[in-house]
Length: 361
Image (cartoon, rainbow, N blue to C red; front, side, top):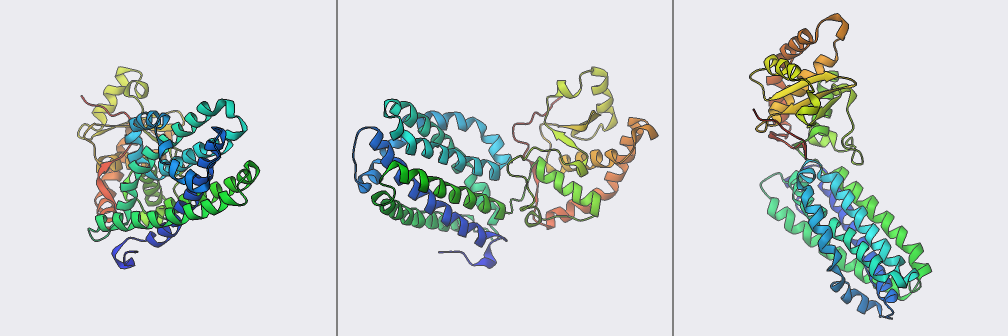
């Protein structure tokens, strides 16, 4: 059921192991939550009935959650791993509300609706991020094969998890007390598994965090990092943190907030007239705003300028002189860096800055 390891990128085996464990624990937990919902509604279903009815309970508020989450697609493209983890946290939050619903049967509709709302958001986020994750492992044009085998493994362990869930619901989890003990344990296994899955995935698209890490490694050590080098160093909980060694760059703030005075905008435009980025050094960070058509290569050029400029002291020269020197350094190293990045497997034809704002004149 697995692909040959020679036909996929590094980390695929680790990803698959934890994906199997994730689906197993999630399926088992879903049986317990469905049984609890039916108890709260005044029914006394068998575990097998709870499994069947779980498909019916996916409607209603879940659709509202799907609609709201669908507006965040650009951010999911930029940070698929963080959103995948958030999806499973939301799913377990919804499942937890369902498990606890027998404790407040008078609020059954509210609790069940809120739980399904969270699950609806989780479903959209999980599906939207699936393809970028699979794509990171494709090595020989075998994305469809990767996808098919990955879904087969998920289905297999979902079935196994449902079987274990039925056994648990018939024994130690037949009471709410049992569910409150076993449920958090299954949820912990579930979240841990998906976090390890995401850390194993060597996503090779450029976003602000990965770009900052690449620039920091290059400027500091002269090293060009590959997707596999960065995967365990990515901050998946707070992906928008500023990276100190990469020039403390912020990307995508509104142009009117970056350049509050028209005169500063005019200076920035004349400083790099042929480039597709604008840079403004102010306060504790450097703002970079990209043109609508800017690619990953344009973002890399701007980021290098910001990083080299941050290494200069403001009192030693004017801002224009510092930027001019930084631009010369960037021009000297850029051809080598971009060719090495492409050889290391990075896609440099686009820059995924999520919902960040871009400019057009």
